Image (cartoon, rainbow, N blue to C red):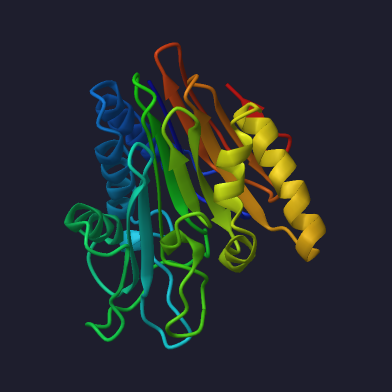
Length: 265
């Protein structure tokens, strides 16, 4: 079993309190992963982070250009390609709402625009939070949750609500969750491509090679990603200054902010 979680790529200060929240979330996720519950692993880990208010998700979400919160989140389960996502949620937990959509199995993406407005409390644009869980049987789930870009246009939907763009997973291959400018990932289906590349590459090589291609294709790249494969290898890489990440596996428990050179565990 393996579990990896990130707190967003950007220019975040090296805040040890934030890192401790991520570690606790990773431990929660890993515990579910050991029981084979990969969806519950990513959901409960991200919910814990949402509730902390220390990241741009849940209670820490930043405001749009009208001064209120619009949150996105999504989940993808590798074994049956089940997906659930929400966009423009203005209160509550985006990741829990995404789980409701996944469990209902009727739709993939629901927009909540027009609901109650809640003012944002986040003071920094700290991007998306995301997680990947791998179970012993090779099942993988990935998820993302975010308050979106600070000052974004009302109604904007980011890649955290789009399977294949901001998150993706396939059983017996692997999963990934991204952070950065969502429009880049929606244009290039970055998450889908990273998972496909993991068929023949370790997670770090997969991330780096896809990022290089994306930059060549669109001329820009402001991204970070975590990934884990069915062999329980985990990786993180970012083009930005910092990206808090925690990894948990039976033989390792590691957290860091520094992934500009990438890390494979």
